[in-house]
Length: 162
Image 1 (tube, rainbow, N blue to C red):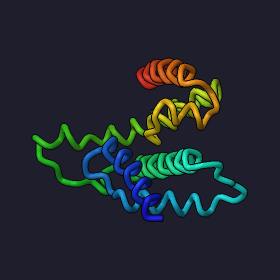
Image 2: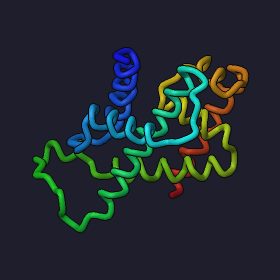
Image 3: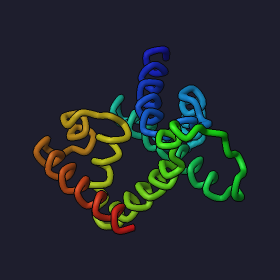
Image 4: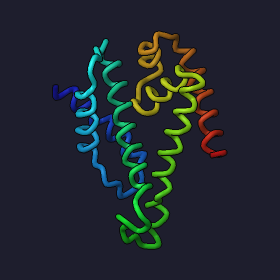
């Protein structure tokens, strides 16, 4: 269990490094919330370690997106913190909107090509290697590399146009 928890914390730490400075969620809270959501999912049998961590990464992503969306619904000024002019470039609220934009673009990609969306989830959010992603999706590493490359380009275009 401690190995599992440490791996989940590593994944959560990766997620939190991508978030804006001053984020109100901490790594432990993200792990705990994702675990609670995983525990609440019925009728799921984890095939192996990669499958479990893929599901955990997806839950962490959902927690962060839900958190970002809820911040977007706050009234103007609610929850604002005082930031010096020098630090204002680091504490950008645009990161919350970027998380939401990425989630929206990823949802659109999933409608068009579910496998490519899963490749992004597993590679970017779960931090899996090409080989681990290929094993989880039962495809070749070359297919993962191709999907990864096309998906990144497609998501970048969608986020820039959105």
